[in-house]
Length: 250
Image (cartoon, rainbow, N blue to C red):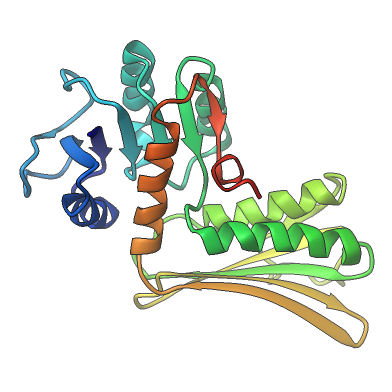
């Protein structure tokens, strides 16, 4: 039985994960962490990572503010962690990367199989088209999402940029510029509205032709299922940094 600590347990994603694990005989949530939540299931909910019971893995869908507590606990107990929270800044991402030398860390901006395939396809398209096509990324999410652009949009841009030699500039806002588009730009645009779960489109615009690669999420369960699979994957791994490529062998 895989014993799980669920960080961010009272949020929307936490509740979806709890529903799925409740029907899984091979895993059990033994404790939750949520600074603002209260007990709603059969596991205790703690305000922070102090005095938690021993577990096999942590699944984190919380807030960047919880990162230091998570790292301190996981480093002390050598507990593998699936970190799926978004909105981290560069300093926090560096902390995550450094923590991977102390305990196993599964870190990704998106746990959807389809999104990670989109990343691979975008890299392949950039390899063939990047020098002659302009690249734009459009991401759409619900009106409660606080970070923009999405972590997935940045993941897509970084993957494409790496394919093209890391010489592309990210353009987030064009309204203040009165100049033509530069060829070494990746445009990134955010839309927030309604209950959109998540939509990402990568546009390669060339002369007289356009290639569009797009992924749409219609339910949070795809991310919850991905997190649970990642938890089972990383539970017996040595210290190190892991992602969807390691689990899916893209």
